[in-house]
Length: 139
Figure: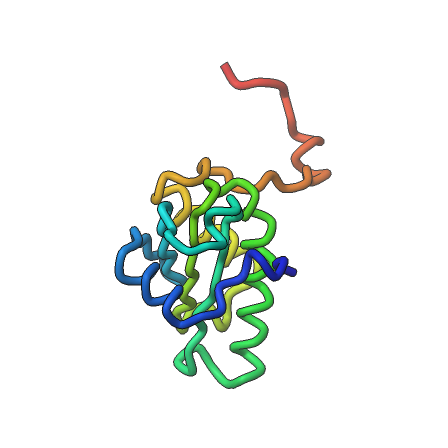
């Protein structure tokens, strides 16, 4: 769950980010980022995020599922964003059938394209099958 101070609520906040921010699109989502947010919350140094999931994604149940998944993914990455930055994640219709892992991959790729995250994204726990086949560092 995103803390209250990290959430975008006002339509004007969304409008500013969508119009002035940089954009990176992927198959399932589009990420808009404004790194110099003039709002009072930005002066406190907190990165903020908002979500746009339209009816094109699906019915209410599907839209809320997509929003919950995106909120969870963004909350894990919010601390890595620059202070005062604002992120708006807009879900596209293919997000309705995507798993959390697929949404996470698209989010990481979009953040990387915007220059805000490394390609690997948030470190994931090691899988047991990866450890079994690890032959040491590649040369």
